[in-house]
Image (cartoon, rainbow, N blue to C red):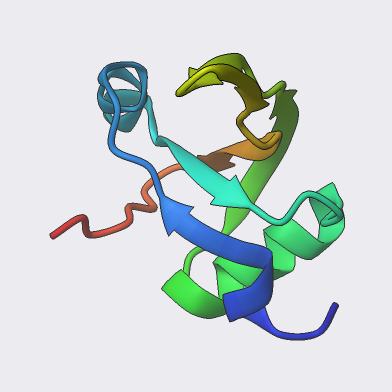
Length: 92
């Protein structure tokens, strides 16, 4: 993967991610096949900040009922990115 727009899908704004913002951590929705090194490079290029650490986890999709059939939401991969001291991402 070479393009940053393919690796990082979105900057997530959730209750948990809003508590992370005070300690320079941000939550991103990323491509399922992206690794930590690719995520780090993509965030540094896209937001022009210095990344200290990247933690990733896969949120397993849930079973849902769609009319009278069982369906399943897709698995998503998320990354918690810790920035170096003094760095900040401007959230609009």
